[in-house]
Picture (tube, rainbow, N blue to C red):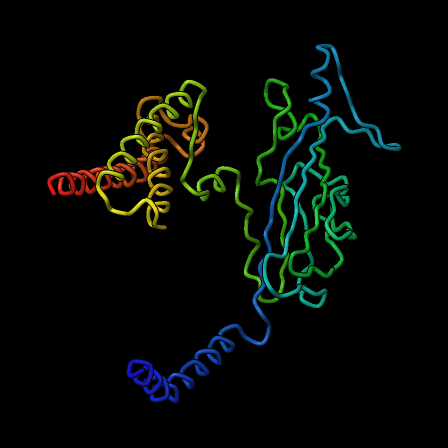
Length: 316
């Protein structure tokens, strides 16, 4: 009771000072944000795809071109890009100081931009042509969590260097050849969506990769460790068999036995080649070693503690 009274008195004494500080901080935070809340938009680009070259690979003597009305295209590239509002504030049409625009570097030209067949909440954009290399979208509403996907079709003269190399073979245009830009109130820039490699690096580092022989080995070693743990645990008298601590100890030792067995299996059979190729072998091994050392340290500590307790219990 005395401790509760002291704590209550401390809260009552500091409350009048803490409350204004919190209020001042919130006011300053709102002042820093300004009258318009900050916005965040994630941009993801996929491409380019060369459909004519992909289809031409079906036969060695194939020569393809795309004819749309009275237009004939020898070089086609297809991009897909998406914009997702990952912030907490909606983006209204009035927030666009400059409209969303897509443009490419010459000699490439825009054929058209269409709403992708993969849509979220049926958000569609209407595009207007500004020039042969640029198109702009009519301002639209993008609520938090909304996403729009657009498909961009490009072409270039087959005799131009961007369409063909000196050997006359189609070349893929660089990823930076498709530019997506807009000027929106309180949005500094579009954030690039993380690639699959970046997502892999941000994933938890507790990777377990086992081949079939490694799995059999792990089960055998885990059973051996579990036998040693349980035998020492029972003989040490740390917990009585009828108590809740005994069951808890068995569960924890079972987890430790399998974790230690996995570490031993890792050192004998090696790590995951998939994640080693994605993250880099040095990074993967560095992360794995820290986890392995922690597990081995727990294993040594548990065996040492139970062994000491067992010897003391046997001498009594």
